[in-house]
Image (cartoon, rainbow, N blue to C red; front, top):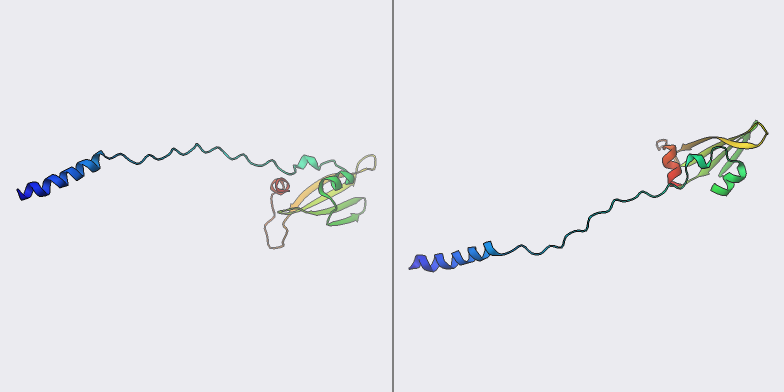
Amino acid sequence: MKFTRFFLPSSLMLLAAACATAPNVAQQPAKTPVTPAAPVYVLEDFLGAGATALDGLLGEPALTRREGNGEYRRYALTTCTLIIILYPDELGVQKVTQVDATATTSNADKPDLNDCLAAG
């Protein structure tokens, strides 16, 4: 009889636990892929552009220096420094011929130009 007193309640509790259902967990919505932001600038925005177009895109350069027929311009962007070189075309109009990115501090690695332009 002692066995029944102990065994019967224990068996009923185990049976109840086995029959219990898991709590209803709301299904997680499917994660939508994150679309990268459109780049602020791309290289094609600059190549062949004149000084006025550059000023319209980037504002005043942090530094402008004339060297012979060429013009060196430096612009501070959010993650890097943009270096733009202009030379006169066959008609004598200053146009962008070279674009490069440098780090904002001397101890940082040289950034990728496309990443620099994309960040703006």
